[in-house]
Image (cartoon, rainbow, N blue to C red; front, top):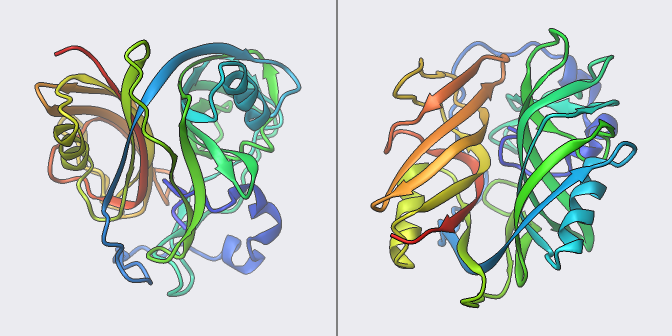
Length: 309
């Protein structure tokens, strides 16, 4: 499936992805995004939470999952969102989005890719949570792998091992987290929101969000923020968008992509989002997205960090 905002155990792709599917040629015609299951009634999941700023360094020898959960646990947080830059992984394993081979999913994953010399991280975003009682991480990013393309996609966090220290800045949630659960609409296991709302005035405040397919990314964020009287803040997250449409860059016409928010702001209740995206052919795009023309493909996982108006 489009790995894009999907958390369906990509760590197991190396073993589970059928060889015929991995090596099949990509169709060159648009693929309609029609998910196999009934549409869920709740299209935007929102949980108001206290936030704890976190920072740290992923150390050589750690996997991405272990390092992030170490930093979050040290801050007393079970989940949240992290940004990373610099440093490198070796080995480095990732997948990209792909067309499905049957009608059981609207999208799928590419074969697992392993640049022989690892990869230097340019920037990446990770949602930190749990699945089946175990630490789980969903991470999209951009990297330099000495010319190996594509240079963006979904990192396999239990198989990416830190080679050079990687800087982390994050916001952890003391009472809430992302939890992987089966999703009937998409037929994938996706992050949903877990825990409880928390209003501690001694902490920064924010909203955890999960946005379902076909909801416009910007409009969904704005609607959630209006409900909680947030008009200004920072937007952090990742997911998938159908044919990303940019103000200042060419539109990606392929409907199956993975995206990461590079810089997101909420000003006067309006979302201003700079994001990067990659499609099934490895085509990358980056820029400010248009409001109203960027529907979610599979899911989007986000954090809005509220700021004084």
